[in-house]
Image (cartoon, rainbow over all chains, first blue to last red):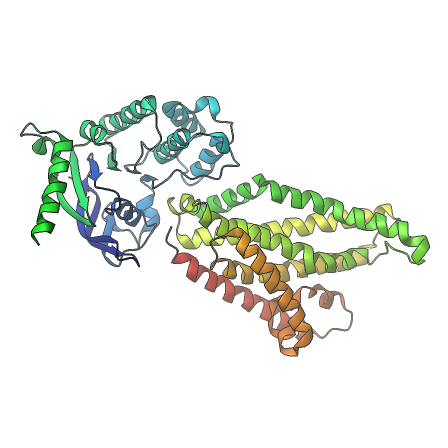
Length: 245
Length: 248
């Protein structure tokens, strides 16, 4: 099976001593991988590392079997991202922004812009300046920009933040469609555990900067427990370990 | 190269969508006209031919000492500290483009802005000459072209210094204030200290005058050209060194 993303002993420590430690993770083609963890656990740090926004202190990141730092352009050519908050140059329109994104991908047509704007429900406001958008609309635009180049791997950090119920349904539908019809691989960090339960085939739990557990959703749910119960159990057992220590 | 070009065109299109940049260009179109009209109105009082054939060069000295540096500070603040503060830098970092290309595209967009501003100011100034009945001969026109081309080089070298400085700031306002104070200090110090006038890129804002001076030695032109070029390369490299290590 093709490996899309692989990290080995990935470590990053900030000045405040927070960060992540020795995270090794592999994403195979077609995986929809959910990253779970409490606030400040290190999920965003991990996603920033695998997209080159920050550099690791130790460890290795390979995208499509190539080292990310040495082959950044080649690796990122097939990656669509939405990291942390949806921030834009708000004095331009959504259409203008996506046109700017399109310039990096010679194969992406003008029609594709219309296609993704329709998919996320922003086609009617494509000529409105982004400063007039709500948080949810910006989130949808970020998703549109992430999927615009038909990426093989999509990395989404809290993609449902600010979305209304319709928006969450739309988000789930897009991921399912891309995954089933195009075999797109996803790495999603989210607090919306029910969404992840419906979408993901694999999950990993990050607590205090470490990947404490990962596995197939089907196996984890085999005992009749929900993903939420599994997650809570992982956190509780972690707390238990600490209190014993 | 195509990815660098994509980044460069994106930076340029962001520049032309910024209201303050549009205002800068609009006022640049009016500035020579306003100066020419006011000088023309003062002509009977002063008894001088206000808009003479040297008007484009006289105006160029004003542009390069104050107006274009102000443009450089404004654009640099938008391209670097403002993007860091508004967290939009990641939009370029998350695309298949290396940090060097992102940085180079931003600096090239700034240089293109400086070039466009000089062209606009030069054209508006020449139009003023035509209306004042002191249109330039071909030889004088070539001299003006040479001076504006030289001014472009000195302004780009100056911009490299401030691009480097901007890497230390996370606030556009903070950078603007610091840049203006520093520029004023460099200008004053070059009057007080001889060495500063040789080694500070800020004291080369009237470098174009050397190029139109009839008796200037070729060696002087050569050495100052090399100095500006090396200063530009040095500050570009230093700026990139910090930019490459930015964590967003």
